[in-house]
Length: 398
Image (tube, rainbow, N blue to C red; front, top):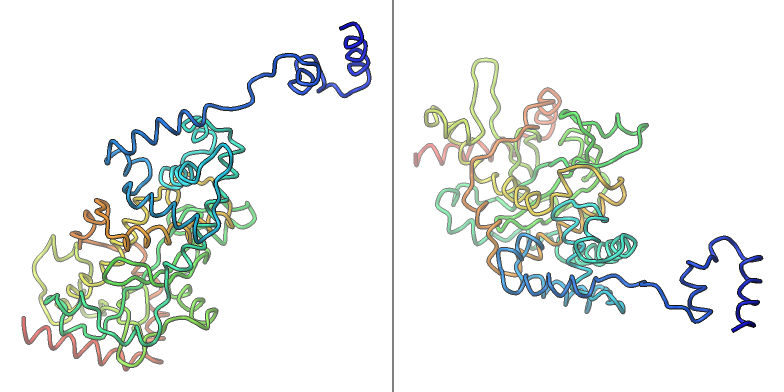
């Protein structure tokens, strides 16, 4: 004992200040009682896991998906996308912490308190799962091939509101703003008309409310037409519809090859477009408004898809926590999770709730019309003819 004390005194004189009698490492070296270095993560996760298994509503609230989907997600992230458990954190707990952050936009410190883990552990697991979820998104957000674009969607053929009038429909396109934190010198570029910094994300979806294409990361100051131009010029694999096929788009886009836009108001009269205009007013008064009502109803699938996506993942629309690069990765990952949940065919009340909604209005749809009209004159004659033919078919059967 005397010899140990002499050596201990020597260490205290010459080693850094962190080597104090209170230091756990010193206690370990000299046989003193080791302080607690582990959290109660295992116990807390077991309690959370038990609750998730017993309460389906609590599972959907915490994880933003059903238990069956969650288990399938954990299995595929481990078996196919390289996510591994560690000694103290299982795959399920890692994924649950990630979903809590994305679904509720909680700070990592609070998630650590909930799960009984350190903030450093939560941060490390967040980025491990984020990487795996990005890889999953590459497989689940699939750009349609030319052959797939030539097919007629099954849901379209059985819906008499749109068939056979919109027989060339292959999807709906629109832009949506996602909050992002940027450096002060970049705020002007990312500042949108709603007085916040954001990305303008352009996405395409099908009638199953599945994302089929995304152009991710355009500055929030960009108009929808500019983002579409970026995508077509910057992506050699952009899925431009062939022949008489088209995406339905709102008046924020030009009526040009591959994109069917509504009739716009002219100098001699106002032409209504959004569903809310018809729901709260008289029925269509002319051929253009009848077309616009059917077009808006069909195009609402992209608004409902965005609605489910943002409702599930509050990290996209609430207080800014992550910088540009991380938030861009989160957009990709959550779109992949959206499709994964939808494809799983498990009951999901978020999708069920939005499936019945058709009342939609786009806050970005009525700007830069003069620029778009120039585009229409240049290459929109083909789509103008398609639009007029559909309008006359609808009017004849009205």
